[in-house]
Image: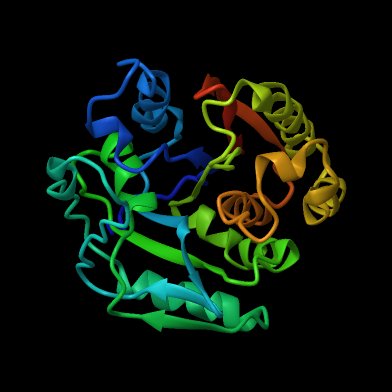
Length: 272
């Protein structure tokens, strides 16, 4: 990272990463993922400055305590199944950032949050699929932070708060998940209205004052149609949002993308 460039505070993002490698394969209808891909491709234009590094929290990595990729050049993990052969040849040769990983670990430790460095963990598709669209040159160092496998909302919000100051150092913090993720609900029109109701609740909630927002997200299961949108015990695609709102601190969230995909409403949010 170039220390001669003055850092500008980065926003925080919660993005949808689609279905497996959906952006890099044929789909029916052909334009199913086109608008989401266009949104992800346009994210650099939303930022005040090119990030010095990216910290991404993926729905596809859960551990007993928060874990941080600490390798110099993590390999890719093709953790999707029954997709076309060419999608297992996708590459994203972004470098890791061991010094940043160590700093993240210290921030979490200083906040009383147990964590560990993982020098062997690779980058999963919740990282490399959206980043291939956002920053296709793969020339920005990346660190992944795991979810904690108890999926406790408050713990993830507190983890986000612990790392919030990285934003002032030019680090872009990205929660990578899906605002609706109930596999039984996709392509089922009976889930369209419930997904819209939950999406409306999310939109209102992230725009609230910090204390109200955090409390509401800790009680997300009480939201309209919450358990239609995310099955209890399988809400890992929502939890990256909790880390994002923690890192947002006092910055209110607002919707930056929304679309009905596979008959369900999917959205992205930005803070700051």
